[in-house]
Length: 388
Image 1 (cartoon, helix red, strand yellow):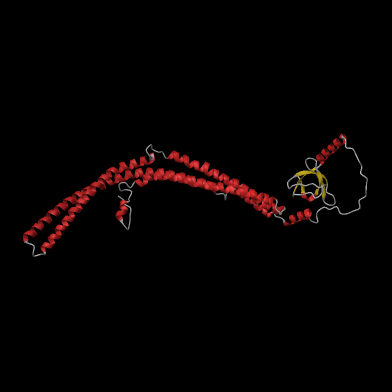
Image 2 (cartoon, one colour):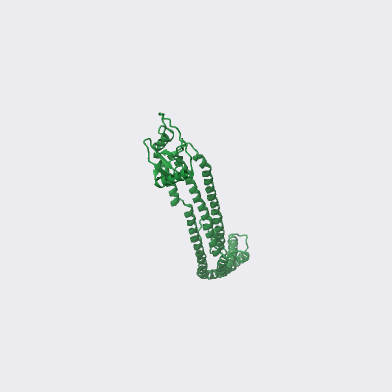
């Protein structure tokens, strides 16, 4: 029978050996330990899910807090867009981490719980059917072996006892033979005791050797039965390890955002927006909006003309509406590239991305006339829009 080697204390190593009576309990307990491990795994990653949810909430709160500050900041043009892109990126990442939270709870957690329920069957009075089946198999296989070991231990102790007795008589005999104070008849009696003890030792030794031989003959059968039950326990444990490996891989897949295409898209868009910061374009916008490029009605002689008073009747209003509708049909649809706030009453105001109609081409000072939905007309800088 094989034993666990130990240089420090071979006897202790032997006592801890799987083959010794009762030591199979560690293998039996492994089933209950696996059940508890499933509970711990679910609890662990539910807590991680809460971390992901809190992070998503904090990202959203941060973005919402700074949006009005950014929108009203003195930055403009491509710098403004870059700053705004950080906030929109945070909103998209918040959505991603919220989805990670849902996956950890509803997908990974439920998956482990379902497998746990299908793989571990609780008994009415505690424990699991799987561990009881393994323990029953080990107990049946080990019972005859334990009886033989007990018998062998009894024979060993009997032999060691009679051997000690024989040794003591031998020592007395040796002492008596070298001592002239011990009478001859006393020496003879001691010699007879030694011979009798020697005979008893030989008989007990023979019984001990016989029991040991029986144990050694039974050992292969015992090992075969124990290994058979152990292999069953190993098969169950193998299934548990394979499942938990897949569960961990699923959790890793949900947590690993380094390969997530949506994350790459967020940061690629952010990077592209930052790289699109164009100082020349931003300076040109400022020049045209707040600097020398602004349109100005330079002083010039204005001839006085008397105002014509006209009555606006119903027919004139209808005619004006017809003209406005014709202008919308005949205009060119354009989209604003930048925000523009009209400085005069005859100028249009619009936001970047807003669409309206260009109804008159650019003049020699770089101004066009446009019409917004609702019929509002006005002038605007030609370089602030693009044709849709």
